[in-house]
Image (cartoon, rainbow, N blue to C red):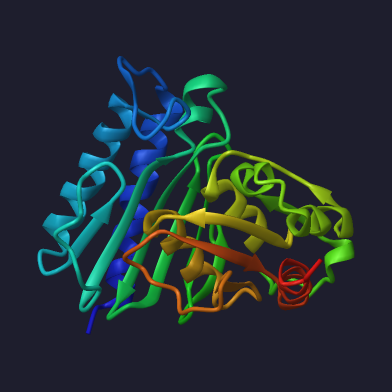
Length: 258
């Protein structure tokens, strides 16, 4: 069984070092497109990823590591100790506006969330915790998020879902207190666990999901697949994240028949 105290210490050390490096020097030499013109990767993404992955591999040689920029297709099981690494979440924000990007590390044991950390780089904030330790912002405990209804909730829905012109997703926006878009899952996770908004719907990859899901478990935030199937930490999936009341109401609207 993994030593949670040791995991917390090492993850917080390396994510702080990586965040400090990015905050102090945002220079990058190359930008490349991946799946489309808005899906970017820079040499700093790869540099930060290598820095984190090498550190974790040295400290936890028995662990599997799944990361965004390095192919992890050979990993077919989440048994044992698994680290999920997103070196720069919100690369477009990093490139274009030098703000609103995050570093995320999620730790799982036999497929279950154990610990997560999200660094809001430019705000010099690290939110961390898990189901056994609670949730903290820069060492200050965070309270459970109030279970607000949708009408009192700020929401984020991915532009891909809204562009589909699905009227039911638009109904959610109209039923809420308003739509907010940030371009970084890590920034949105931070807002959710701090109670600054109450609903998030998007298609997320494992490294977008892992850290925040670990934080959410003791914070009053639910994570569900939009189709009701179990969350799978080895594939992309459309998830609904938020307080129970807000997610229940949103799912009711999504499943509403014309």
